[in-house]
Amino acid sequence: MTPEETVREALRIKSQHADGGTCPQCGPDGCLELLRIQGLIKPGEL
Image (tube, rainbow, N blue to C red):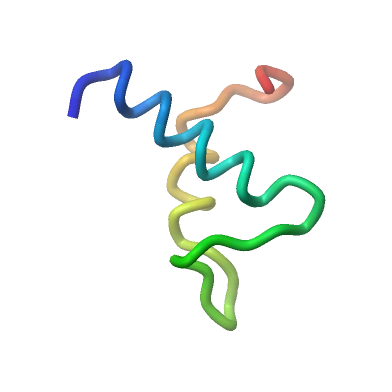
């Protein structure tokens, strides 16, 4: 996956969780994908 694809995927996942939304990867204990991308995004960047 290229850096550009990684950013696009992170933005897609982030937008799915906006306003308390969920994504297909969300489980009862939260979303591992969201936790993974939070490490890619700097505070205040989005």
